[in-house]
Image (cartoon, rainbow, N blue to C red):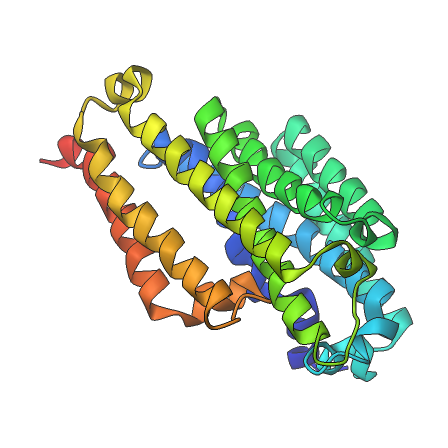
Length: 293
């Protein structure tokens, strides 16, 4: 067992998903407050360790199927680079440190972390084989991240953030299943849940969720509650970045078949990265610039 294989096992690149913990404080314009930022960073670390323990659990359960996958067969457990007993030890260490940090920070954060582990354990052992339920649980995982961010920073999570987070997670989950389905049609079958999907259904579902997400975001932009809190009616300009970003992701999914791993798609696609940075920059200007200038 090498350090490289251990890092690969705990999937540090997937910690980018846990940046959702910063969203409640970011949209409340409170990330410049050091206690809030500090708690958000510590919460991010605690949740990331817990999430990595779940990734190890998932790899332990999926190892027999992963050995038949052209890419996943190279994962540390599936390839034999890390033994099952070693993986269980890593899982226990990550879960122990992560939950201890969460308990020290906030009781609600601890409960949300434990709920995340419970839901993902159900997902790993059985529910990931049930079509639609599987992607719904992926959406729940992102919601728990946002709620954890609100809990650890003491910031109330708005209903807009809850709705849009779930819609975005559904888009990512559906696109992931589509990528897996395309590979499976090449002669490999990796998930029983794929039996409940086909390309027309996945394409329509992704399109519907994307449309609803854009409409919900536009409603958010023109909501008197939001414009009043932010103190600007120019928030609708950020919708251009959202629409272009969703269109780019649809292109990756429907044209290039590059969304089997949404995290990898984000980390490797310069177009998406530029759009995301522009969107974040626009909100930084709207929420924080008036304090600086």
